[in-house]
Amino acid sequence: MAKPLPPPFDKQKVVAENRRARFDYFIEDKFEAGIALTGTEVKSLRHGEGSIAESYATVDGDEIWLINSHIPEYSHGNRLNHQPRRQRKLLLARREIAKLNGAITRQGLTLVPLSIYFNGRGRAKVELALARGKKVHDKRETVKERDWKREQQRLLRRNA
Image (tube, rainbow, N blue to C red):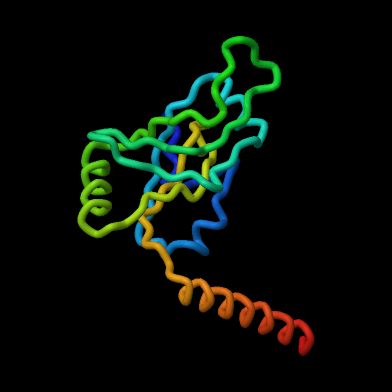
């Protein structure tokens, strides 16, 4: 009897998260992409190391590349260790790549990685977002809203 496939975005183990992206961008749409990694990169990620804080994705022809992501060298790796900041190919269907490329060129959106995680089947995945950049006044509004929600929680806890 075959085991049913997990639903998409079934995050089992989040390795790296780009928390700054939700502050700097309005998230329009989300995609799940596979990532082409070498053996030592997978081992580093399984140890919970990695950062996508300053990374972004770009479309180059019919391929999508993750740029400026940092996966540190594996501690027990030898001469076959990887370069920490190399470009990594993202794996998506051609239709999804064409859709992303159209949104980037026509609408001026940005491809931002939100997180790297291992799904239920043990595969490394990247959660990508089509995002529109926030202006300074939008960021101030986000900070005000966050502070107000925090104050509401304090008041509710005090009264309860």
